[in-house]
Image 1 (cartoon, rainbow, N blue to C red):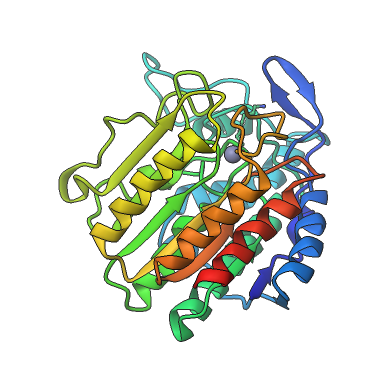
Image 2 (cartoon, protein in one colour):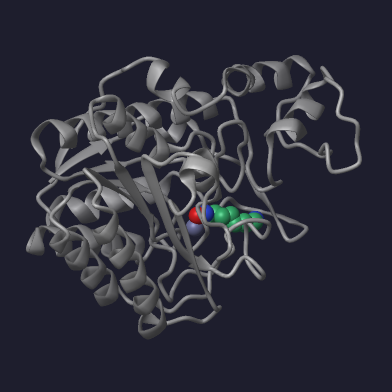
Length: 343
Ligand code: OKS
Ligand code: ZN
């Protein structure tokens, strides 16, 4: 399988993240990529491919111009304000504030952030920009010849909105991949998000659109990030009515429970008949993931890959979450291997 690899991913390496009131080392770190790359190299005879630079157009097709301008210059503004450590917001324009247009970088970080867990560093833009190029290159390849590709990149993307970052995400890679195939001629694309967390950014980006189906299986937001989105009653709006499906599951869910949700997701995709499929491939639903509390096992990920393969759709896999260094490589390889066995 072609593995489009973001070799600039390590330009983004945060010193820490806020985790329930404590500053701890970042779960989302650069070691993840080498581990996954090495695991898939053997398991799926990965041909590593360097992304081609497609410039800003495919990114600007998803994200707002003011947000992109902010993100590209955030570190420069932060360091011009005298800071050497990672950039974090500390105040947000929450309900009841009149808003205004504050110029201070700390205010602008709060304006564009959904959460306090996501450091911006000197190389964040570079890593995220090349991550987007990685998924655009993978999407082009799949659309052109029909063979599946894996976009192996970090930072992840599914929490990023058109004008918001957070949950370790800056540019919504899965959304950019889906849009790229639409731009190239696909009429309908489905995004299936199997990450443990709800894909709030992806949902929001396509919420009023009829041409992109968004489906997410995730931990009940009543008890898990992103908390304020991901509920069952969020089904799309206007033209997008019926083109969003949330499948929240209780904490502790094992594959018996998770598999029921997955079957529901598969049914929706089959009925919807997309021209192509993007898998937002987080593997943090595994039992060893300490940030999460689902109980999937590596064999379960293999079954997931097999069932995706049986759909017979043009498929782009996009890396999202998964942090347990001892199992992430195995779990990604299990999904891709299962896919290849059945596709
Ligand atoms: C707070 C941790 C919040 C969870 C961020 C979600 C990351 C993820 N310190 N998204 O899919 O895996
Ligand atoms: Zn996740």
